[in-house]
Every structure is written in structure tokens, then in C-alpha cells.
Image 1 (cartoon, rainbow, N blue to C red):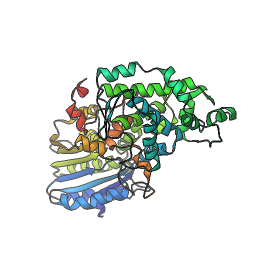
Image 2 (image 1 turned 120 degrees about the horizontal axis):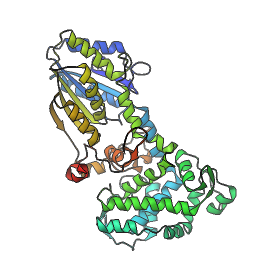
Image 3 (image 1 turned 90 degrees about the horizontal axis):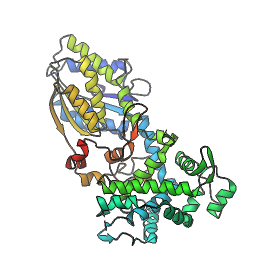
Image 4 (image 1 turned 180 degrees about the horizontal axis):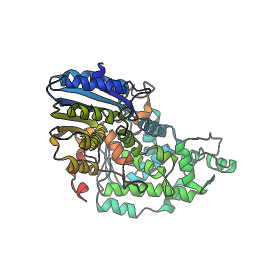
Length: 460
């Protein structure tokens, strides 16, 4: 791949283990200046893309772009995404997660009516054994086809589902959980339990599960802060109740992502919160760290920061008389956030008449995009957006193919059933600024059709 057509960076930086150095960016701008058309085409891929895949995209699209201008592909890698992926995939190996999933699918489907696989589900008439069989089948043979209740279409919306949320009784939940042997045995795997507590919960000898997720759960259900030794059933029931209420409220307000996905999202959201903020497991899932990697590309050093490196050299070329008339910014998924930062930096460095054409399939919030348009509308000549139909978005597995993970056939990838945009919207986004961040489920993202169809969500 010709290095005059891509910039590879790690955490927003050039050099080190990145393929591209500052001298390579000099060569890129030299090649651009030799092109009298004055049209720079920049492409920013999404956050799930590896270096290998990013270069393959660049190699495939470069011939298509050369007829219209000089293409440069930002191939960027984020360590934050690897951390997020690792922590979510490990849910498939967590005994407590499996049992929380089972009980919450049971409790939710018992309170909403709907249709799953053309089979009616009647509230109050759900067989717990059937739910258990569906969950066991999924964990024994994870695949898109075995995801439990993946296709459930809930009929209970609005007042009916909200009424179900209000009527949830933690005492009833506690009694049911305490009588559930499998659930108790899963709790017995939590770390740092007293031998008597582990024995009482597990009956037989069970292995301790020490992981960021299990430690976070242990902190939530233990007798007191920093006292993981004893599990308190009341706290277990309250945690399950809180998750259930949130699932039902989202169903009631049409803010759900389907039964299975919503239950997974709400388990994650509940467990990642500890005390007044995020616990260590929750901090590892912060999407803001991913955004920071895109922002770090626009730091002050033009020989280190990958975005600044190109912009500073473009400025010098323009100041020296190069007629840069048009810049096309093409971004897929998280690449849209990169473009927003690029436009912010370009406002100061690249003065008119250079105009920007923006093409997006964006994983960016409405709020951030509104800020971007408000600030740069006079410089944006054309804008076009591409989205998936919602049915396809829901069915677009975030880790979709064998080989995307380290193991060629890794069943853990089915733990979340929908696209990256659904995952970000359901789990990762927050409202507020700085240390005043508030978790926000079903955050409206510009590239999701559901928020264009339900516009009242975005006007409140």
C-alpha cells in the first residue's frame, strides 16, 4: 500500500509502533500539491477496524477515489476499544451473568405479552423451565440462531409495561431467588466469600471466579462497602429488581432494543455503577476513552499527533499558494467523531475558500453533531448520510464473523446480538460533562434509523 495514501496511528499518535512517521505526512502533502485538482479525500474507518482491515479498506477504495482527487485513509487503532471488547466478551464466561440473564428474561417475559418465533407469550404464564432451557442451549451452543428471545416482539407498551415496572415486588423476587439452586450456586463463585457463605450458597464445592465483573457484583451484593465476605440476599434482590424495572420502563416507553439485548444492556449498566460513580469494571467500559483516542490525534505537536500533523502541513501548503479547493471527509461509524474533531481543528488552520463535503454513516450523538453543524455550517458545502434499516441494524452482530476475534470460532461474540451503534447507544453513552456524567440508555445516535422514525425522542 502506497504510504502517500494512508496515515496509521495508535491512540492518535504517529511514530513508535505506528507505520506512519511525520516524514511520511510530508510526503503525503507533497504528493497532494502535485495534484492540480485541489481535492483532498479523507476517509476515517470505524472503531472496530484493525490495522490489517484498515489497510485492506484503503487498498480497495484508493483506485475508486483516484479519479476524483487525492485520497488519504486514516488507519487508527484504539486501545480503549480492545479493553471494552475484552470486558464485554468475558460476560459469556461469568456464572453470575448467565443466571442474572436467565432470571431477568423469565421475570420480564412474565410481565409483558408478545410473540417469539411465531409463538405467543402470555404474561404470568411463562414456564421458568422453558426459559432455562433456552438460556442453557445458547450457552452450550452460542450462535445467532440460539440467542434466547432475540426475536421477541413485545405487545405490552406504554401504560401496560410501565404499570408492570411499578408493581415489581423485591420481596417476591428475593423469595424466588433464594429458592433457586442454580442462581445460588452462581453467587457462590463470587470472590472473597467466607467459606461458610460459599458453602451455604453452593452446597457442593464451587470454584471462585475472580474477574472485574464478578468483583463488581460482589461489591454490590455484599453486606457493606469493602466487605465481600457475606452475600446479602436483600441486596441481590434489590439489584435484580432495579434491572427489571429499567427493562420494563424501556419497553414501556419504546426505548428498548429487543428483549434479550435490553436485558444484557441493563445488567451491564447496573453492575458498572458503584457508589457515586463507575467501579473499575465500569471505567473499563467508558466510551469516552474511545472518544479521547480520536481527540488525542489533534494535540499540539504536529510531528506526533496524527490529525494535527496533516492539518498543519496543509496550512503551510495553502499559505505557500497551493489551491486546496475541496476536502471530502468520509467517515464510517466512530470515524464520524474523528471528523467532528477534524472540522474543529480545521476551523482555525484552514481558512476559506476550502469547502468540506461530508459523508457519514455515523456513530455520533445528535448533540455532538448539532454542535458540529452549528460551528461549521458555512464551510460544509454538501452533506450526505447513509444508514442501515433498523431491522438490519438489530441483526448486524457487532462481532459478526469467525476470525474477528483471536480464536477463529469464538462463541463469545454472540453475547451481544446487534450492531456497534446499538451497543454504544444502549451501554456506553453518557450525558453531562467532565465528572458530572450520567449514564444514558438508548442514547440517540445520528446513524440509527430508529431515532429518525421516532423523532420525538430527539426533540425532548
